[in-house]
Image (cartoon, rainbow, N blue to C red; front, side):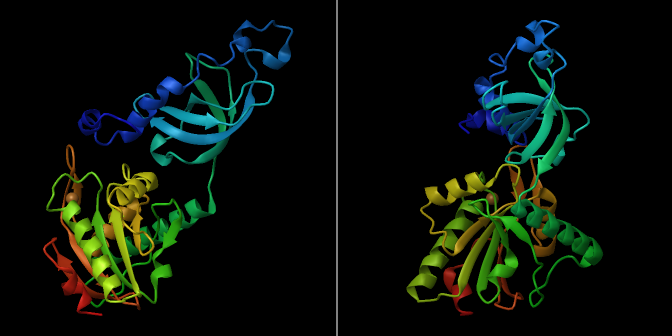
Amino acid sequence: MNVAPLLRLSVPLSLLLLTASCTRTETATSSAPSSPNSATPSSGASSATATHPIRGEIVGLDLPRKVLLIHHEEIPGYMPAMTMEFSVAGLDLATVREGQRLTATMGAPVDGIFPLTDFKLLHSPADQAVAAAALALRQETFTRGKNAYREVGEAVPSFTLYNQDGRAVSFDTFRGKRVVLNFIFTRCPVATMCPASTAKMMSLQAAAKKRGITNLELVSISFDSAYDTPPILKKYAAERGIDTTNFSFLTGPENAIRDLLAQFGIIAEPGENVFKHTLATLLIGADGKILHREDGSAWSPDDILKFF
Ligand SMILES: [Cu+2]
């Protein structure tokens, strides 16, 4: 992920492309066997029309070229495990993402790109939980319509997102504890916005610990889900020395994040380089109802801790 920051900023929404291009040097299209083309007509097994079942993981997406970078497992008798470029006819690349595992049938390469058929994603239980929750959230947001926004006193929506370790975390698991929740994005360049908000959360966490408060969970949800993958969030927390035992950084499907922004009353619009956004920090009671809301980043830990 060592992509030059300049490059990243010039094509902000194309991280996946950049990921693909920075690993392209590792792609081994050149070392892929040329035997299919040079095979004698009599050797049926490795003829140009030979296909091979593969199993692997998406490690990059090149949207303009409609190419998937897949690390596939060993293909017995054909090639060792390696990362290569693949194409899937008719696949909308917006429906797949890095980290997803798949099975498919690989055909002979065309210009170094291997066509896949029978493309099938293998959804993990975590993926399924996140997808099901996103769907429920979508329906709920749609049903609420103009009343999507949750006022103080109302219950927060149920949601399931990935945390910084890539595990699916349901908001329901925080029931019985008080939750302080905000929305950020790790690339935020405005010191008084997300960086200040995260610093406030950290001082709140420290102040609560000092007072012996144990029923507190802190949750920061990224609204830059295309960029803020679990590893990025983990790095963000580690760089700040954040104790993640009761401070989670969450990310997930873009539509789920959009619905949460609507329900929590946060505006975040992708701009050229960064998101233009508002900030709010919510205190949610053990029963899941919103107890208090602080707009902006000018609040102090005491503004929250006075409710404890
Ligand atoms: Cu920000």
